[in-house]
Structures are given as structure tokens and as C-alpha cells.
Length: 191
Image 1: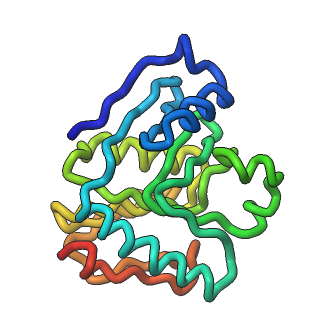
Image 2 (image 1 turned 30 degrees about the vertical axis):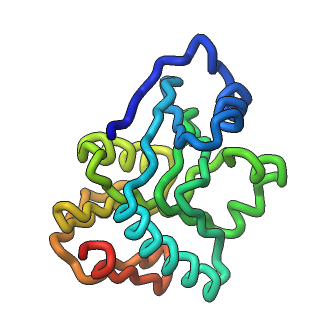
């Protein structure tokens, strides 16, 4: 299965149009690029879903204990400042930033770039495409990003203004200082 990109810019011209397209097709995983192209992604394979749960579960638990923000799974879409609407595999936003949004903004594709994003590379993902997406998050305000690649057993760590950090077969990865005290164990993700 592959990702498809459609040029629907003549038909999907506004955020409201894209919202309606997604609402009319809830079984589809859709994103929109900054250029307005619609990306249709296949459902995650079972092993990718299992790995995603191994990321969002600890993130949610850490957030519950810390109370510092809001954690999101892969079904949440965010409208980035560049106009793209993206759905990272996991995300986190500081409480003050989330609370500054109106309830209506929170109920749609919130107009905010998460502070922390995770992309989990699946077999159908081209590494160059996922790396481009991670760079887009950084350019739009993310403070920390992890691209987790189970095939290569690597973690790419993105921080604005810093060189890309690559960890080969790490046992853990730390969210400090953006997510103080959050450490993700990678054994269940890489196995």
C-alpha cells in the first residue's frame, strides 16, 4: 500500500472544505500539504499500530502524572502556521498553549503546531518524505520531534536551531527538557 497525493486545490480551497472532506470520509486518513494537495494514507499495518500504542501509551501516562499539557494520538489533526493540516503519530502541547485556543478551535483541526511530535516510519513510508514532514514541524514551531524508524532501529531527533541527532539502536530516548522526565523505552517498538 502506498500514500497517494491528489491535487484537489480547485475543489478543496478552504480549511472548511477540507474539514467537510474529512467529515464525509471518516474512514480515510487524510492530510493537506501547505500547497493544498490532499494526501491519502493507507490504514496503519497491525505491527505499526502496535508500535504506535507503545509510544502514545507512555506519553499519555507521563502527561497524566505531570499535568503539564495535552497528549494526542495519530487521529488528531493540527493546522500548522504554513496552512498544512498534519496528523503526527503522537503529539503533545503545553497546557497554556492549548488552553489559549477557543473551544471551537480545539474541536476542529486546532490552529497550532504541537510542541512535541513523533512520526513512526511504517514500511510504506519513504524516509525522505517523513524527514521532510519532521522539518516542516520544526519550521512551524515544534520544539522537539522524534522520527522513529523501526526498520533501521534508529531515532532521528529534531530540535529547532540544532543539528539533526541520530541515535542507532538506542534503548531509550529522553524528552528533556521539553517533556521533563519523559523517557520512552524503545524495546517494544524496535522488536
